[in-house]
Length: 344
Image 1 (cartoon, one colour):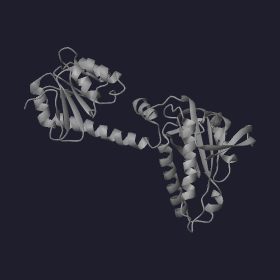
Image 2: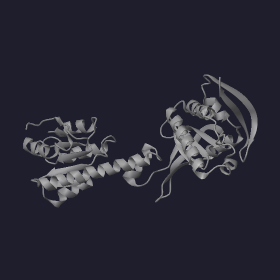
Image 3: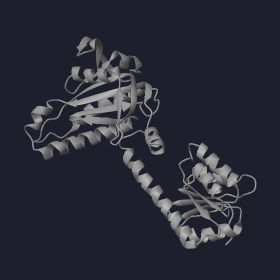
Image 4: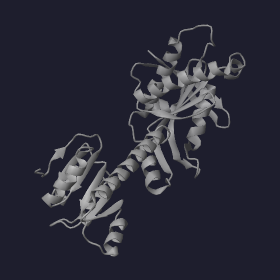
C-alpha cells in the first residue's frame, strides 16, 4: 500500500498518523484503516495543517523523531493553538529513555507507544484513547445544556472557571401568572407536562433570537442574550424573543386545562457570571441589573412586555410600539422609568 498525505475513510472517528517512514505509515494504516477514518502526514508542517482541517482528528499518532520539525515541536504547537489543543496525542518513538517519555507527558501527550510495537497493544491503546474522546464528547454535550462553551472548555481543562464581567447583555425574566392558584387545580403530571412544553417552546424562541435559557426557578424562566459572546443588538433580540413568547402563549389552543398567561420584563446592563459550587456546578449571574430585571417582570402585566429605560435606549424601534409607563416603584430599587412594548 502506498501512503502519503492521504485520507482513508471507512469509519466515523478520525485518526491522524504522522510519521516520516513509509513502512511505519503503511503498517499503521493497515491496522487502523478498516475501523477509522485515517489521515496521514509525513512531516510536522503537514500534520499541523491536517490537524486544523475539518473534520478534525479525534486522535493524533505522532512520531517523535522526524526531520525538520520533530514530534515535540509539533505537539507544542498543537497545544498552543486553541483549535487543536484538546486533540489527544500519542507519541510514537523508538527512544527508550524515561526522560524522553517524561518530556512527552509534560508537553501534554495522552500516551506513549514504543517502536517497534505489538499490533494488539497498539490497536488497544488507540481504541482506549478514542473511547475516552467519545466519553468527553458525551460529557461536553451534556454540559452544553447548562453551561456556555467557554465555561465547559475551562472546566474540562482546569477543573475551575474564573468569574467573568459581562459588560453588555440583555436579561429576560418571564413568570406564569396565577401559578400558585393553577397548581391547586390540576394534577402534578399535567402541571409538569405543561411547564415542560412551554419552557421547551421558550428555549427554541430564545435560540432563534441568539440567546438561551439561563435557568428556571419554579415557574420563572430566565433568558439571556449576549452572555456567551458579544451581540451588538442584544436588546432587540431579547425584546423580539419576549414578544414571540407572548405570541406563542396567545396561540395555544384553549381546552379544558388552565388558561396559562405570562408576564415578561426585559432589562439591559452588565453582570458577573461564574460557576458556583465545586462538586455540583451551577452557572449563574449576579449583580444589581439581575435584580432590576426580576423586579421589572414583577411590575409588568399579564400577557405584556415591560422594559426599562436602559433596554429602551438600546432598541432600534423597528416595527415596535413603545408606550411610556412613567416612573414605577420597583421593590427595593426605587422609581424606574418603564415602557410597555408591542409589535406595531
